[in-house]
Image (cartoon, rainbow, N blue to C red; front, top):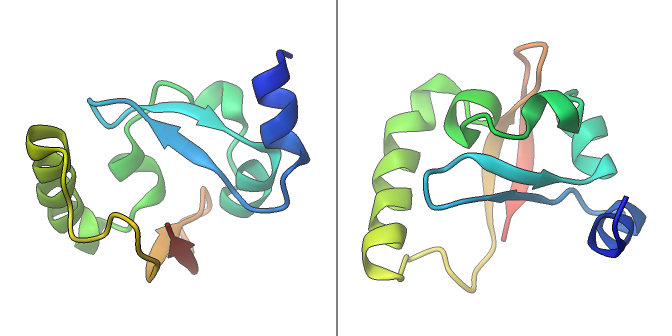
Length: 97
């Protein structure tokens, strides 16, 4: 485990990071516990298919595409409450920043 991973794992907040294609590139221990996925199986998977409930995926894809294309998004530098999806299919409230 490198220094970056140790720092992420020490955090109490859940952290997931994605690349420009929307695939998970990092997930800390708190996120593993919250969403019910082992990072080894989640890394490389698309965020929208893994952690976002189906009824919100299209909206997420549109917003993510806007961010990638323009570098801007209405949710940057803000907090919002959204629904997340656990590995067992249950929806949970999460705060997105």
